[in-house]
Length: 155
Image (tube, rainbow, N blue to C red; front, side, top):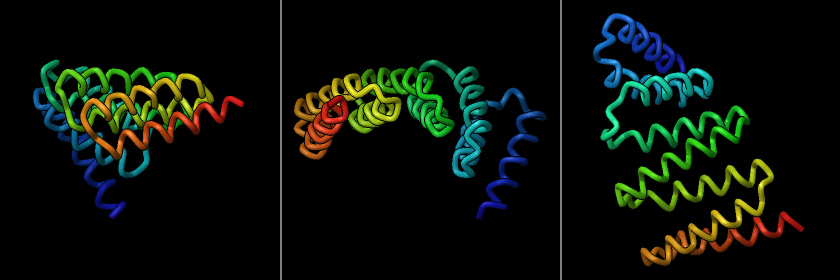
């Protein structure tokens, strides 16, 4: 429930204050709770702290960058959202993650929301190519649909 999630955030923030050496362990659930509550400013602050505190080799950093991008997009601040999503994509690409295509798709959506239809079209084109390289029919179709929609928005 919303109340238990809010109480969970308060508990995690108290734990963070009393156990600063365990901040990477505490920050990830704190971030997630804030995102669930749609408290995007608190969520973005928590993800920023997590990214600053976590090890560069932490495999969860890509998801943290992606969630930070989502929080900024929900606030309506698309330029940092795009930059953070690009960070997430770079990490997912380096990890050879099966989630790469969904991260590229989200970046295309951010460009569309910003009104940067040409960049969105290019991004969806990259999605279609990435999906084709992986024989992923679903994302190839989504990339093609995204390109069509983005380029139609330019007219």
